[in-house]
Length: 127
Image 1 (cartoon, rainbow, N blue to C red):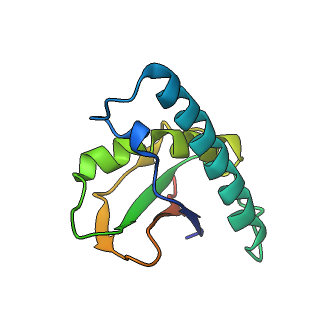
Image 2 (cartoon, rainbow, N blue to C red):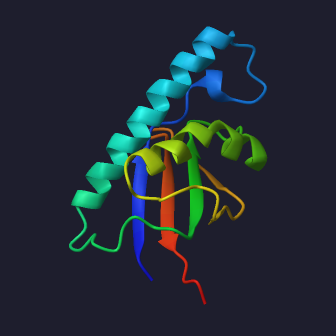
Image 3 (tube, helix red, strand yellow):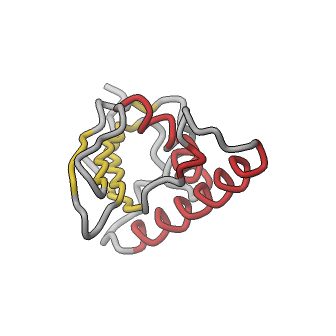
């Protein structure tokens, strides 16, 4: 199985589903986070010994969310806040499309010194 790990900063608060941010702030945050995810995915791909197996048409993405404190977001809100990041993976050529992607329940942990999101993308066979 082929796997790639993309590390991102925590998504901006404007991308949270319950955010009270205006449409302009959310649009700007979406555009920026999508671009950041695409760049991070390209960097992660270049660090692999062999990335000729990309783009991935069918994948499973395990989200590992490291927050600053022990106050965790709901797992479904984490996935919703990362929608633009998943689109950025497609923009970068890691995924052909995000329609055939499975998202197991997000793993939540605390890392006060390095809050981040890790997207562990695993290619799934068509069998």
